[in-house]
Length: 181
Length: 249
Image 1: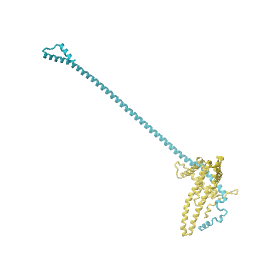
Image 2: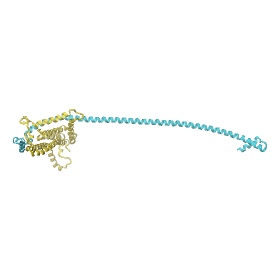
Image 3: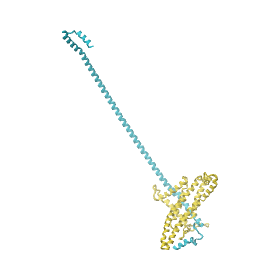
């Protein structure tokens, strides 16, 4: 067998195949090959065009749509989340503002209250001060009016001691008046 | 089975069919065309039958193939080119599966016949030409007169463009055919060396390790080539379709 193979290889195309020559260039086989190629390739093209290609294209399209759908759904959810976060932050800011408002209002109220009390206390003190001053001035006037009597008594006593005789009331008053003015 | 490196490409009639003196026999080539179509269709349809939102392993292979071809077409012909997607995807899957089927021992490689690759290339060529003419009318011929070229140079450039346009189906088909053919012949020759040297015995058996290593390496290379040629065929198809869509570029 092996020897035979060598033999054939050495000889090239064996005599029994002559006429056919090199098979791909044997024109007698062309008609059959063309026909069967047309049939098989035509059928293959038909199958590809009507079954395989639309099906694979459909699968890929579905997948693309699904991915796009999932992405847009994810985007929508993200937007919702963002909106919720924004609403929460706004509410928080509002609450903070409100709290701030309440605090400052309370502070203002307390301040005003305190101010009023302080003013009232000051007014009270001023009143008491006035009353005390009036009292003092009363006492002072009284004391001053009594000074004249005391001076008269003292003067009359002195004059009596010196002169041996008490001055008249009229003279005394006159002298005192001139001395005190 | 004959052991010369050429006999693997031989067309063998399985069911003789003759119509009007023409031979339309069901051959081993036809059988592997049917097998290619059946395997590719079955894989693409059954792997996606679950329509899983999260793809399983087989489904992601189908999706990967789809995305791969769609990316190729979109990058070279724009989103407008997606109208040709079923054609481009069919071409890619057909060529790829046919090439990979050829990697099984004793399997026939459909794409190792010039007539098959030429028909596929002509399909692309005619699609480009007919669609381009239908859509753009005479403007389609702007393809042969690139913008910004001085009129004097156009006398030289235009014929070159015409020739390169007309030779596209040839280059497209020969590239695929020659790659598959050469790869399979190389594999067969190296594999034949193993047998020949092994038959010599002793030193021959030891020496046969070298072609064995080569065969393993070339097998790996051929898997790469099988994919790469399907890719190249498809990417060129996409670029030609771009011409049909935007001839003024």
